[in-house]
Image (tube, rainbow, N blue to C red):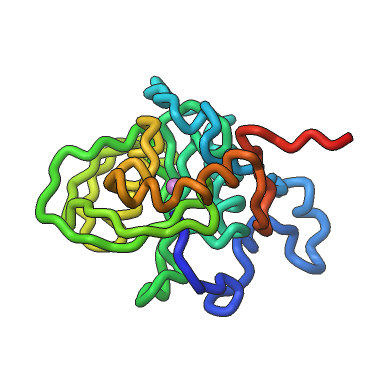
Length: 220
Ligand code: CO
């Protein structure tokens, strides 16, 4: 999920500084892993429409993927990212609310197998999505949720979330089920956005992060 007008760099120190070798300590370089930026699949790539698989056990590769997703999301100014969006059909989402309105410090969340077990209330807010750039609209979602998940050590966790955090988690869990925020809009609104959606589908978009469009332009 993305937020409008939030400059990540303006509000926080450089992301994931802990992954970079500290100056003057060259020996630690070999201990560090340089995280990778992943391309983000955009509307309406088939990987965004598939249901991601439940994870049976922790896997070092998936923990690395989670770190790569966090880095990718930070670079794209996002506050949530689901594995489908980087072409991985596993039930994994990452959330970092740092930089969103009113949030100064937030420990990034890595959630394996997130499951919303309780929902309460309804509220409407405008959403965006890194897979649907330059399109925003209002979506109604639960105001308060209870979610179970496994953390990066694969330990069982439970979280109660309200407001924006609850919204981001619901948006990302939707992705794992092949659902996009535009699917929640009524027919009239979807008609209104059709031109923009078709453009994204054709890869006709301008973003500052690497994307994998559904129908990449063939040159020559
Ligand atoms: Co999204």
